[in-house]
Length: 88
Image 1: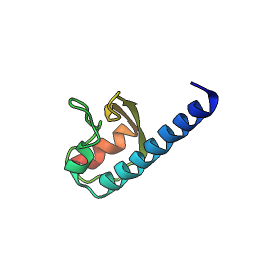
Image 2: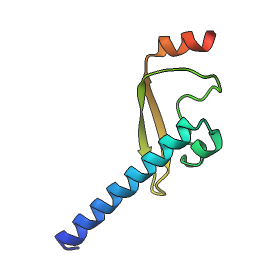
Image 3: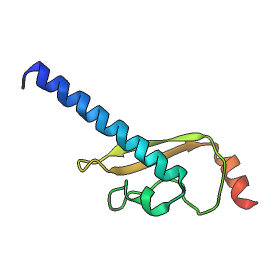
Image 4: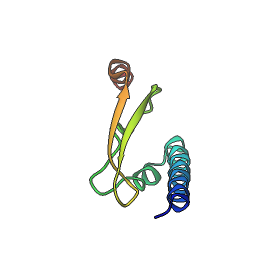
């Protein structure tokens, strides 16, 4: 593969991933579990998802499978604050 083809492939993959991230964010913010679940491979699931509304800051660390879906997700957030909100 020559350098130009490799560069175009890398840019295309980045653009596809960025578009997927935008669509995932829209699904997450739309609070539609089915739309969020569609981004995960069989057996993959977000690290949260209790059905209880919480306001939390943090991020998810994803492992993307060969099918382009999220194979694993590890949440990073303030667990004490999250637990406190769940107990309300």
